[in-house]
Image (cartoon, rainbow, N blue to C red; front, side, top):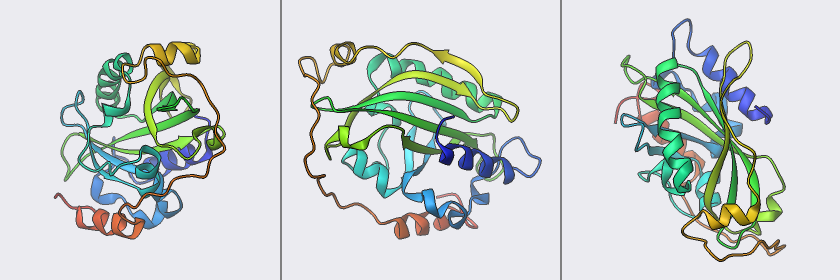
Length: 224
């Protein structure tokens, strides 16, 4: 894991387990992760092949240019990456360990950044883990996005995160920008550009609303 917030989220996940394999969704206190709340999301992964956003912070919605709640997590991943992610997420749930995803994200006009995504399995009302507490972090200069939303991501590597050290699961060298675009059906003929344009503004649910929604999902996080 490269970003300090990734370490903080995994550390928080580990603390609230309290000796269990995974924490329960009701154990999550939004106040404990308030500084990162706009980047945090919860996925429903009863079907790991079709994970759905249950909640998503404002920062994520702005980055993707849409309200993410109720949409598919894999919708913004290019085809090969989406195919690889299903088994990786299933492995994370089965191992009851967080997974760290490294990816290249691009706008429709090919502004690119490196991203890190944490998916930490959680249960619901004591059931087997079927959800993820997750967080996106951009690792490189966001000016490369030019204020435009992320259109798709390409998976570069993944790691199952263990307390002693991360264990590599999937890794491949980052492809050239031209190959990323060529492999993505929605951007077959785009060229790489860097724009210093002013970021666009979008309106989404506030983080206060997100926190209230967390509270509604049980004790602090009950079943909806």
